[in-house]
Amino acid sequence: MRRILRTGVLALTGALVLGDTIELKDDASIKGRIVAEKSEHVAVDVGYTILMVPRSAIGKITTPKNEEEAKDPKGENATPPASAQLAGALYQNPGVLRKESTVRELVSVLGEAVVQVRTPGGLGSGFFINEDGYLITNFHVIESETQISIEVYHNRSGQLDRRTYKQVRIVALNKFADVALLKVEDKDAPKFSWVLLGSSDALSVGDRVFAIGSPLGLERTVTEGMLSTKTRQLAGELYMQTTTQINPGNSGGPLFNLKGEVVGINNMKLQFSEGLGFAIPIETVKYFLEHRDAFAYDNDNPSNPFRYLEPPRRVMLTTGKSALPGSGGEGK
Image (tube, rainbow, N blue to C red; front, top):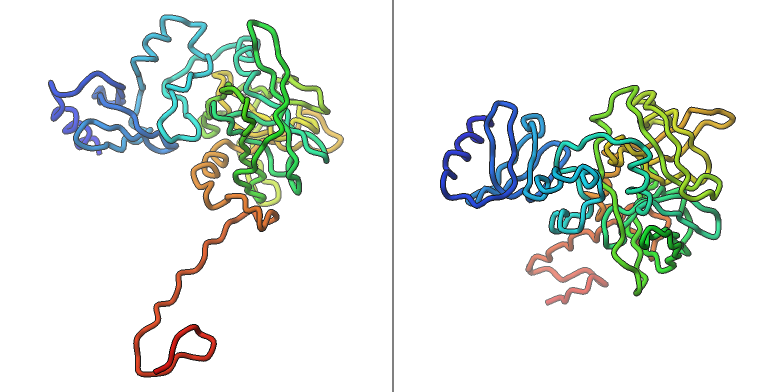
């Protein structure tokens, strides 16, 4: 792979326009346009082909926009504008190595993207993953519900403006992973603030994390803790265990690292205990989003977390035999 990457760089000498720069760990670099970012590789359009660069070989990714933001430390961890999103992507991965900040600094930037999810049966939390109103929450927050409303606190010139959106569509559900994808479709809905999806695999035990949510209906509540373990097995599933305080109402809300990236979805705690919260790893959420067609919500079968396609039709061969009665064919 390393030989292929070097060949691609040499072949572009003098012919490539300025774009994204991928610096490799062996002191080589690639210039091109990043067209997709996955958990295991980055796809780069270098003009005549698309290279799949393993993340393990990447040292740093730099874009012209990132170079401008580097001049403004306060803007480095700000929520990226729509132009930073890849065309056709439902969510955005961090494109560069981001610096850590304090929880106080991050909350003022990220809080607008965290919402309260209300149904007739209760409430939970959620967060926007793009400006078009797509948001993530837990399946159990909206289970058996179709009347869903989203409460958002918009920042208007330093003042918080609380708005409720009631035209909310269920896009996809995964009951077994406890994840749901919703979309706000109110006609007067603005462009929403959104958050980056980071990597839970990159976390280490002891790393600081924090949550924003609505425990017991107390919206915009912030709690901080540390990652206790990355692989706690419960009911056959792996969860991240954290000392971050989690209570009913936090379900579906984001768990952030100190770079302001979502690394998990808060979804449960042990009863009669403190400091024993659990979150779904964000890699599980990314898999759900990338395969959302398989989990598409079906109005005709709302209790089913999967969507089944029609089986392929059998091709009727032309023979001298009569078709079976009721088969739709015609006999000779």
